[in-house]
Amino acid sequence: MQLYNTETRRKEEFTPLNPKEATMYCCGPTVYNYAHIGNMRTYIFEDLLVRTLRLSIPLKHVMNVTDVGHLVSDADEGEDKMEVATAREGKSAWDIAKFYEQKFFEDFDALHCTRPTVISRATAHIPEMIALVKTLEEKGYTYHTSDGIYYDTSKFPRYDALVGRSRLEGLKGGARVEMSEEKRNPTDFALWKFSPKDKKRQMEWDSPWGVGFPGWHVECSAMAMKYLGPTVDIHCGGIDHVSVHHTNEIAQSEAATGQKYVRYWVHGEFLVLRAGKMSKSGGTFVTLQTLRDKGYDPLDYRYLCLTAHYRTQLEFTYESLDAARKSLQTLRREAAKDVQTAARQPLPLTARLEEIKNKFRAAMEDDLNAPKALAVVWETLRGAELNAAEKVEFLKFADGILALDIFRAPQEENNEELPQEVKDLLARRAEARAAKDYKKSDELRAALAAAGYAVKDTPQGQQTEKIK
Ligand code: AMP
Ligand code: ZN
Image 1: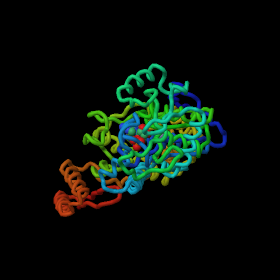
Image 2: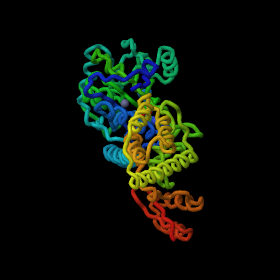
Image 3: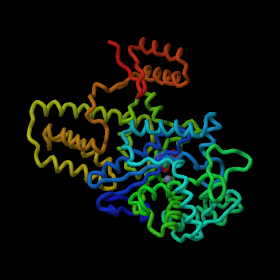
Image 4: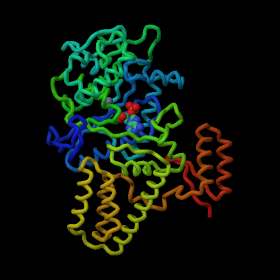
């Protein structure tokens, strides 16, 4: 398989360190709020990688859950995102973490992302993090400030490994403005932060340096190396993690072990909105539930993600989501026709089947070219190279990677081609239900019935049926 490696800036042939099992670490969610569909794009691309790698080798896949230590600013300033959420929601940090972790995995499962082999919570690995910081201290990479233990990046020559020297200089320049006086270098970062003296934190632990909590970067290094050893084959994340989070992970891990930390760095590009960045404050925060409430199926969104290569930005619009939904429904209808034809005329499978499967697989193994793989699916369905029985076999194989429920009965498709008036009523009803305004929700149900639609509430959101 060919993979683009952020570190070497080129596509490389992937070979695992251990020929019996490949290893992969993915940065998981920070569980202080709902995940947005941009976050979910990253997990979908990682799932494509998991499924494609497993065609040729067993894979141990580790993902963390960041439930402490991710600060509001990358410059080790500001509050912990978890503690900010406690103030917002009036719940304990532990309850918030539990709630949003559960919500996250509901979306993860609904998008057919494969559950990782190991899911590791940061709060369950504090001793491992303290041990890593101790090793760094013994090796002379750390220093004390009034608010924590910091990593001295000037002592690690490979600090520019991911970003390159020129960009690193730019980062330093940008960081200087907000650099605290006690930091020795602008790129230095906290390994352990002390709890503030004037405020009681909900999540804090004893350490050799004082009561506090781990820095976000050290969490991933400690957990990745605990489960996968000092050298990990593949480490994934969104593109935003390259210049700080992953750069710092390399610095800590390699300084501690003296070995290469990650062999292939694989990063997914962002999902963007025309209005710019997806932001939790600016009203441009779209979650999978937002899409469900508007009558979409989570797999419509998965299809949309498959139409763009993971290393290109994808602009999210409802028009493109509508197009994705239509294509997926057509795909399911065509698959159903082939199933029927194959049942009527069970023709034998020929060598052509393997050839087409390989064509599909080659696209995925070419740095996860999902758009090309989808094109192979469409060409095959529309073309006459395979008979119906072969097409069914091919689609089963393809769906093992695409995970689009291609054989779901097309009549289960709901909310298809609804009139605009009905879509608006559904959106208003979803809002009313979210606000627990059940009186309003019932009025809107009656309005929908008057417009000819019965509505049912399911875990996937509202489903409609035309009243005959
Ligand atoms: P977080 O929960 O903020 O730590 O982010 C979870 C994952 O989502 C990380 O791998 C991020 O790099 C990724 N991510 C954040 N925003 C976006 C976006 N707009 N598009 C794609 N991935 C994103
Ligand atoms: Zn991470």
